[in-house]
Length: 127
Image (cartoon, rainbow, N blue to C red):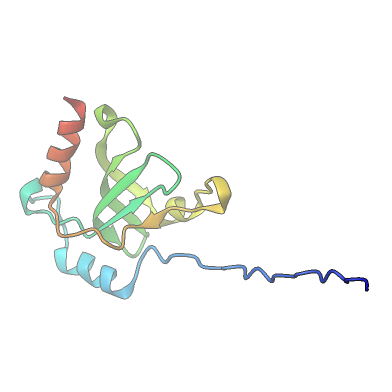
């Protein structure tokens, strides 16, 4: 008796998931915080954190202008000595393409922190 081998076929489901960097709740939090230009770092709340899932790169955002879609944030792109506050456009973050089809992601589990805490933590990496 001959055994016939059956081909096992498995369907691989393609996940087409793209993380939203900004949600309505995050936009409200930015609006609530408002202009930070006259505030001390200890009084500025980090609203959200973005990161590179394939390597170095973290952006801690504390202000957002919805009209021109520009963030103010603290960025550490892998060299703590060069980390700084500055601006970046939402479009720039969304257009970054990483290995394996990855993109910049939002840290869903980032807790409540101030800009001063982020700066202090960055300083520890330099020492």
